[in-house]
Image (tube, rainbow, N blue to C red; front, side):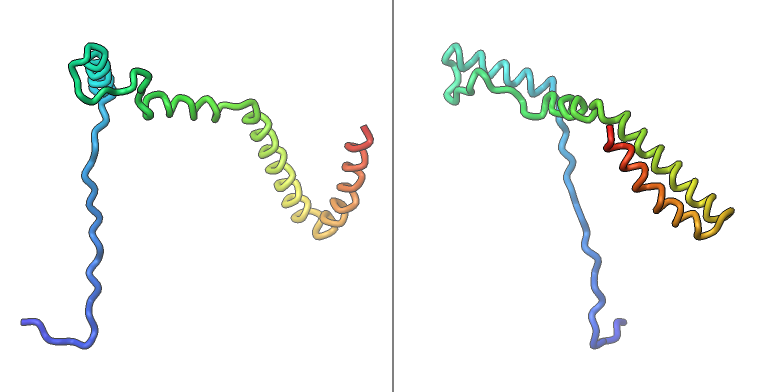
Length: 117
C-alpha cells in the first residue's frame, strides 16, 4: 500500500527513437525507375530527371575538406607548444621562478628577430 506524501517523485523521461534504415542501392533503383516512368509518361508524378540523392557522397565531400595542407602545420605547432611547456616546467623545477623572467626577456628578442626578416 502506498502512503500519501506531499512531494511527488519525478519520473524519468524515456527517449524512444525508431531507427531508420538507409539503403542507397534501393533508393537509386527507385529513382531510376521513376525517371524512366516519367520519360515514358507512365507516371502521374514526374520527378525532375536531374534529381539525385542528397545523402549520397556528402560524407566523402566532407572528408576531402578535412584532409587539408594545414594538418602538418597544426601538428608541428602542437609539438612546439608541448616542448615549450615541458621546458618551462623543467626550468621551474631546476631554476625556480627566475625561468619565467628569462622567458619574458627572450620573447621580445625572438619576435624582433622574426619580424626583422
